[in-house]
Image (cartoon, rainbow, N blue to C red; front, top):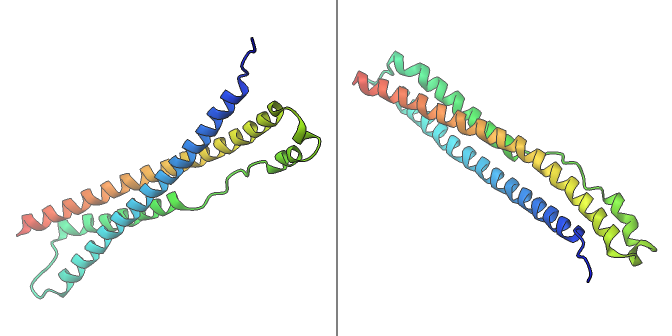
Amino acid sequence: MSIEQAGPLIAGLITKELDAQRAITASLQSRGLAVISSAGTLVTLLFGLSAVATTAEHFKLPGPAKPPLYAAAVLLVAAAVAGIVTNAPRTVKATALARLRPLVEAPYWEYPAGPAQQEVARTQLAAAEAVRAGNQVRARWLLIGIILEIAGIASTMVAVIALIAKG
């Protein structure tokens, strides 16, 4: 009876983790783009509102509405910047390809698969660790962007309430 080795099982797990981290990267970048889009739309609406307000003859923006509108503009622009940072390219520790080069040369190519699979697993593990570290940074920036966007929306709501209360 032969005993199955753990190496292939471990290597498969590492490959799945690397794939999962790459999928998380794509998801975080996609959500960062959503923050950019929605914050940009809201900033555009704020600028449109200010353009209408400054060109209307008898309209004067009430004093209590001004600070939250200023804050909303700043917060929403900051949210868009955080979304952009979420998508910014990052230097990721390169896969140690130099460590793999000897494996494709003689005599290693003819060796049993175990040592080569172990080296590939080490390389994939290093890549997965690097991608995970980058994802943690992306996730923080995404959270910052979402919080800033919520604060910008809340500031806009305060300004709208001040406008309605004046009328």
